[in-house]
Length: 79
Image 1 (cartoon, helix red, strand yellow):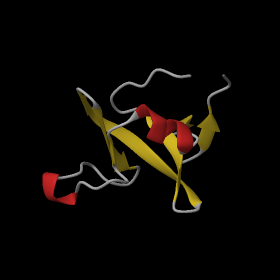
Image 2: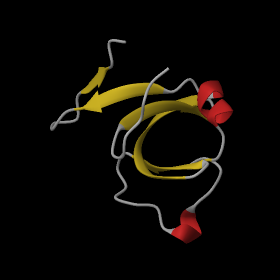
Image 3: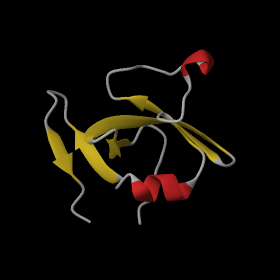
Image 4: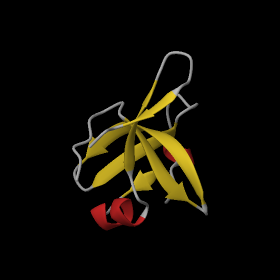
């Protein structure tokens, strides 16, 4: 269990790899993610990987909150 805020960095299982995403935005029933190196996802680039419509999808992808430092080092939440 974790609480997410806009601009939080998370790590997810995506197509047999672990990838890091930034929480771009929230709306009712939807979480929009952007890969850590992207500034934003435009409407035409939204897909099932970067647009989460269901909390079960987050659970299945083994979400993990991460912290990315100024020089790119990754630290994991201790919870």
